[in-house]
Length: 224
Length: 79
Image (cartoon, rainbow over the protein chains, first blue to last red):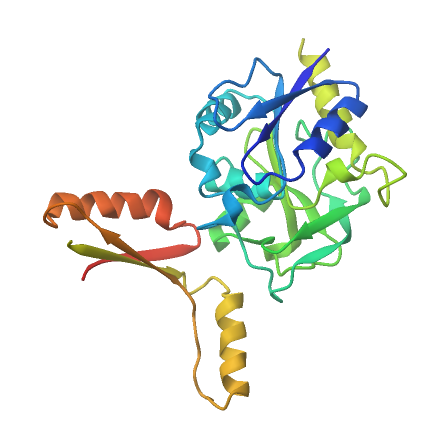
């Protein structure tokens, strides 16, 4: 059974939801700890949402230098699937595994709502189970989700098909409606909305989070 | 103890929602014609003298942690 790790940082909130979503997808959920440089031999890693280190300095800036991140960065550079959700996306940007950065939402508000997204590319290990152009609804909740990058970076991301999700109703001022991106290799994906909250009918507006997990499981089983 | 200051500002081309909100509030308070950009100031007390080597170290610390140079610029100033 594939083993998917979820890292808990001081201030992580959604680590347990992510672990539960992994379990529901049929993989083994492995809790990982920020203070250890081991990722326990997992096949994929999720950096969950929350407010690591109280969002002090910048979101994800201090968590980026926790011991586990050196291991995550080197594993990601070797091709391991890594998904950053919300604070995890901010962390991946701070670690320079993904381009750009998040700033305060354009209208200054913390936004919590069901968000409509378009899947722009299925050429990543976390989206290969979608179809390009799929419109999905998953939960969004953040105060600093406004994605920004310099114009050359934006051009490069678009030209190389690295924009993974776009907002259908841009809630926060993100450049080019970008909600999520990937690295050049397609194994590292970050997005602000929360697929791990959208895997059960009882508590979510849709089950549109499930294909994230089936995607990575398909990828991992095809690889063996 | 000698002090070195690192000022961090959002790059000019990056939107500054906080500065914009402050600008709006100033206008409402009767301070028109002022446009604010909001940054951060770090005061660093160093052991011993502020040598060029120490300043280079602080420069490196600012680059690595205090500022995110994707969206922010910084300056190192001796106080």
